[in-house]
Image 1 (spheres, helix red, strand yellow):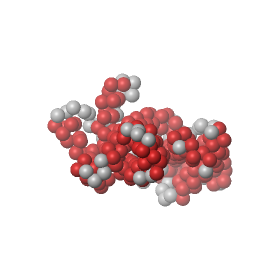
Image 2 (cartoon, rainbow, N blue to C red):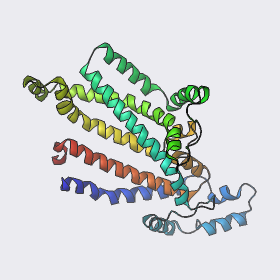
Image 3 (cartoon, one colour):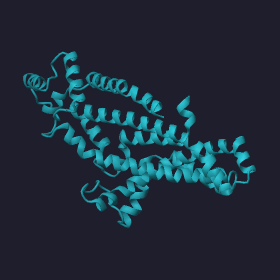
Image 4 (cartoon, rainbow, N blue to C red):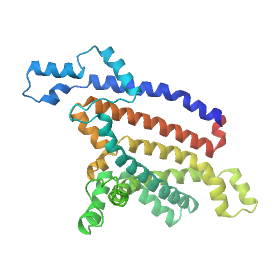
Length: 313
């Protein structure tokens, strides 16, 4: 097991360096001038050049790249171009809101999706299976912003049960959960549709295998066969997919954050790209890239723990 865990760690530095390099050069080739974004359309050529000099943007690209890597590896994200705060402080204010949404949405989607998928597979071709599959197709085809609006109108506007704007005070747990419920349900219901479909398909494949028939022939109950033998093998695919969904949410649930006006990573990333705020954009993309590497690593380890055969392939 330790050898399997170690193999995954070998690629982490290489992937991290590749992500940082891509982030740096993509930002430099995008159209737009940070100095122009700071000073506005009335700025003179002289004042624009002064700002570029103060920000270090007129240095050779190789020097900027080495300085960027040094700062990133030492945890210094620099000063935001459009505010008096450091980029790290700005990012730190938004991360908890997005992490809350990603964790809660993935938990809702995984739990409901696995439960519905198992029931649909066990009750294959019954009315219950048909209803679950119909709901899954509706969930997969419905955009997140449409579902968000459908939840906001009755629960937020008509009955005023939940707030529909903002993320609440992070220091007040009850207020934080109150603001999180509607966005988390929006994300979770969309994920439920995908996880349910995947779980049902994986369970049907496993339930048709010889060792399942052998387990039943030994006299094991249907519940034991499903939970102990079938679900464990089917979970490998579901865990991998859930990990990808979680990583995607960490990368910025931009649409859901926009519907509920949550001050998360997605909102900050869009605002910073528009303002050409390089330090904040670089810090956010580095953070997102690092999170994706970590989530993929944990997903591989979890799959190896669930199915030992993966560790020896």
